[in-house]
Image 1 (cartoon, rainbow, N blue to C red):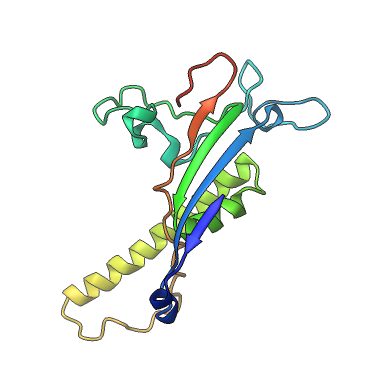
Image 2: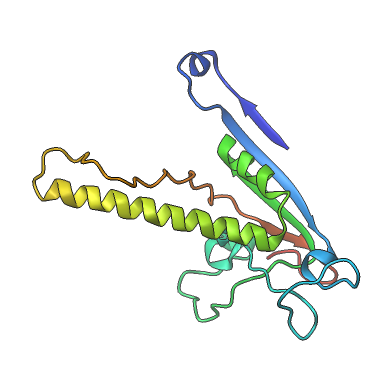
Amino acid sequence: MTYCSQSVTGRIHGKEPYCRSLCVRKVFPHEVRNVIAFKQHKQVDQSGKAAYPLPTEGQPANLPRILGGKPPEDHSNHNPKNWDEGLYLWTGKGPTAAHQKIDSMSLDFEHQRQVVEMRERRREVWQDYQDSLRQKNAAGKEDVRTWVPNVPPRPVPDTRCVSPVFLKTGNEPSVL
């Protein structure tokens, strides 16, 4: 469910609308386990479960403590949390976050991970490019916008402030 509103002034000045999104995702058994004649995952553990890590925003170090997050000093247990069968709650702010979530809904966990890695690489290349421009500026060159044959594309805005929260699976506790 996505809700957006826009004021007349915002519309006149071309400002982005105010949007909030809420998504409940059910992870089915075939998404994280091998199901004969349906889905075969490449890497599974001894119990037959595939280890697809939750996105960065769903890891315990990045969650509020009330939702099962770990305090910053508790990095001794650095094992990433993985997707499991059950329900997940995702919230987001802004139209870009909603658009990215809708786009990711057609992807399996492996493809979602690949998209995230591609965005991270693109963000790093862009940051390196911006750093090189700052270095040229600090070196005293007046025209910082020197011609560069391969200017990297601008990265997609970061919407990782949203967090998937594990709701329920079997007899386990109801937090991530």
